[in-house]
Image (cartoon, rainbow, N blue to C red; front, top):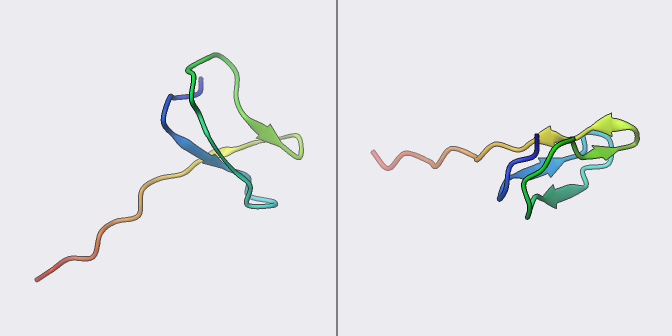
Length: 46
């Protein structure tokens, strides 16, 4: 299931999409399911 507000990316061509409406199924590109992108950690300010 796709999650609203989450960003998905294609590992082959690096295309990115943002889900604007929750629904069944998965985003695909090049006949391969797209990966959910995770947030980059912020640098620590020690």
